[in-house]
Length: 477
Image: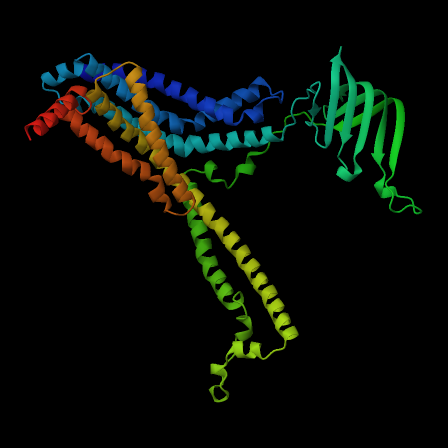
């Protein structure tokens, strides 16, 4: 390795590591914000939270790595240009491509590693992450009944507590809707305490000095069938046992079996082939079924051969309908509309079933192409960031961050547009997923060619000089 290559590595690699972890932190915070309701207030252990952070960190690599490469290459070559090191290298007869060569080799290896990460590690991480997320969503929230407002954290119950004093709940009101709204039970008490049973599966609510009201609608007296009865009970001490399992129950990872996010490229290709075979088998059957049975009145004409001697081929159904009396017309219209509704519902069910299969095929195709677009985006962003930094010649964190964020937003909008087009079936999956690469690749080639030719693309002086020439030309005119 030459000293020049080693020097470029020393300039680029620390910046890449720094920007990668910064981008990881930003996207991780965004992911946590989306799932904050699944984590907060459930009394989760530190181990569960750490497991969630590790798995979610693996999922944000797809967005963090391309942005980090763009920012690092822009900062590195911007610093070299600002310190006139690029100028010194070029004056020694070293071309810009030769200066970028060691980083190009390194980024190429990163692209290969990114593909293997997306293909082998990411599916396992996503399987574990979403299994954990589904498990967290089913966990009961940590019991904390607030004072002065209704608490609905216990399914089927609404509990109101006016105040709390030394562990006692004061002026309690409990609405029990576990048997349905029409059979609700209302309990009020002066004070009470709440505690878990030994197995942590039930809540024991001890109430003092109160009364309860229960709807006895199902037990109406025979002599008053239209009346509504209520049971009223006064008590000095009453215990209520509520079902409230606070333990964390982890789902089995088999719940993610068959989902596209849990498959590598080989499994995705196998599933895509299986779905295509299924579609090719179902499509002719559904089409033939619709044509044969689900066109209004078509099934009654099966096997009907018109007799031209009797004029059957020229028979007009409108003339038959006009000769009917009004009750017969109404009956025919009613039966026809009922048959039409049945045919429509049958076609809707078939279309929904077939549409789910098509949607599943698109999801697998999108996930397959996504594994390749991540690696390719890393390479494209380097060929945008490195020449852009050489042209702008601004290092530090100011201009590179602004430029990188704007470029990444542009990439994200295009990529998301292509993804939605592919997901909705407006475009083929490969066309939608490669849209961002097709747009950004010419930009990278253009910027690289301009940087290699020392073009003054973003220098204010060149545009001011051009403006002065334009004004001079119009003055002479």
